[in-house]
Image 1 (cartoon, rainbow, N blue to C red):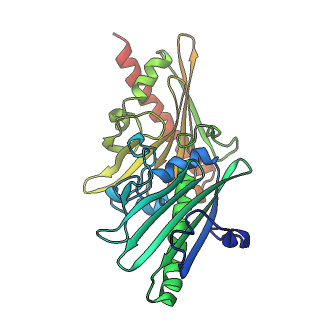
Image 2: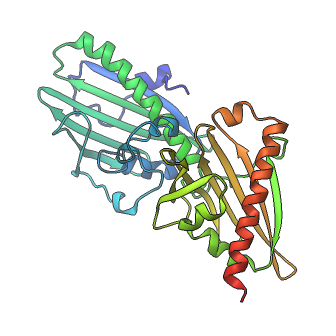
Length: 337
């Protein structure tokens, strides 16, 4: 994903440039996001250490402790940032940023002083073709070793911004992240494994089981245990933390709700190491006094997507036939005498 700014973006005067007028170093990056500024803005507002975190790609965050991973949902408690508020930063034990200028949903400027270095970080969001062009500018004044800062600091800035761009795109392409995003639907081609089963209970009863995150391991084949469930489950953006395998060899993974339409449709982005991520959709339709449950699964990343073929698709379908059999048994056991 490109984070290279245009020549015009580099030359533009941005809000906050006047805070450090003698800045010897200015680092510009820019990238595109598939959502309008109004949807992108709150993610930058809650960004920060001990706040929303720093939004890195899912594959990278899987290698880090859970406490170090960025949020994958918007937290209303973090969205009340105001000019003058100070938030912690990763630039050192006592490093902070102070919100200097805010013009929702287009401009957010942070300022900071780190020892002898004075800096600003400007975030500018511009609407572009229905999405957002994000431009970031880091300005540094009082730097003693300018060449080192320009070369090594510039490389580090581009690397971290690239991770941020990919991580934010992941979050925004989820229907939970942008209110006006297009609903996520599997592609209508051979890459999708589809199974269906009639359940002798109404859609609301089936939904009650899907809404019970702690029951996930009872019907999802290969899931051994559920470690934690967000209180908001199964609302869009909620996360279910689960494990697969048997002791002492287990792998910790998670499933994130992308679309949640009670008693109608649930779409999950499920991690399944070592095979990668898959998008799983469950659709509920009333039928003859009961429910027709249709389950589709599409590998979207990792080895599962790279080597997907008719054989692997048949295995997915067979596994999901068993999953729906278990789901139906659970629902009918709860609703029938």
